[in-house]
Length: 614
Image (cartoon, rainbow, N blue to C red):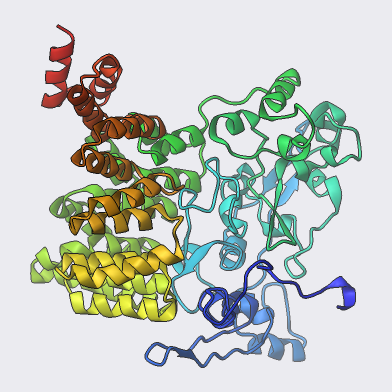
């Protein structure tokens, strides 16, 4: 405990037995799988899938020079010969120079001098990012050639892009205007110690004139107070693992108005929220008094509507994707959401972005085009199979795998090379249940059901309680006509994750297929009460209630669902049907109006409009 360090329990309220997912030898906590690649040097995992064991090797147990710069023998030789030079370090990846920044004329913010470089993002990002590793050797590769970055709409960020779960900085930093201008890691951090170059506001003063920004006229707090610290307003921290405070690196202005609309945090009420009356509304009013006007049309409002499936957001979503002022990681995250709203305009937007210079955007475009029919998808995507970025090529492999068996031999050969490259990439993390589940999906799309089953079994061997594998394998058995084989998997999932809407829904559907409506209804009800609930869950629950003669309860369910998930055609149409069935037509008009706004040309909607507007 020298230096103040101490051991402590991350889950003090849980009994971490060998069967617990967080036991040190299980997948979610073992060193070989979860820690070594970033905390040691030249790691070779050497995972034996058949034996489910490791023979991991490394050159240094900690992070040494070669972890970032590649082989160092030539560097050592040059040093011994006293021949080292800035342009001849002997390393495969020499230290990159960050841009210098200079104040010009009366500018309040410094401007970059020189050409932007991605070297540090490529180097540092491989560990300081929430990503999937695509190759076992990442040194010297571009980030997107070595990794697949998790985008902002995949669960680890708040709706406005602020860090929520452990996102490890890079996805946050890529959103920032500073990154867009050329700021890189070593402008603020010593690359070897990780410490900031200057403590306090002096760090920001390198580029932001303190006479303009480090004054009460700008920050509206007492000098030298916590509120006067740049980082507390523009880089709010979240605490992970009880003791690890990590700051958001998107460098945004606090937006209490977004907190009011979307429930996201903001720096103002994070500090002042424990004081009576100082809530998001107070913070918004205070900023307005200071003359800080929030910009209209923040992309988070669009993204949030897309996440709940509001079809009326589709046009705004496609426009936002092409908004040049948004960072590529934001555009990619929005583009990925387009798949839920297939239309001529949205698919043309996705197709156009296959040519984008940023691999995140191209990858998201490929993903969005999954909504197209197989033949059209192949015609549009096949010319891009040689994309220079691995992350894009592997997304192409995923998106086109189900087309493979429909292609003539010569075209199969073109796709086969990319699929085999993708298979090899998956082997890098073959000790992960998520990877084994991805392998199963790939094999199913390629028509190899036996290989898919083996991959599911391997996923559950690695982590017996891995929910996606349990649910997907149960669905696999259902598709194979082996419903009895699915039941124990679903029951296990129910024991492990009773608070999962997907689990409750899957088990409820299983009981309905068995004809056990009485048993199914409680599970379907629980499904729509969970955080991960989807509109489909509410629709199925309402239909099941109606089947059991509980149409009034079905109406209540659908009314609540249309508030949670606005402008959902199936929910609205079924609600109108049940209102007619119960003779409760007093409130039917507003739901018909909503149907007319989202599907005015649908024959069923036209009939309803004609019927109730005579």
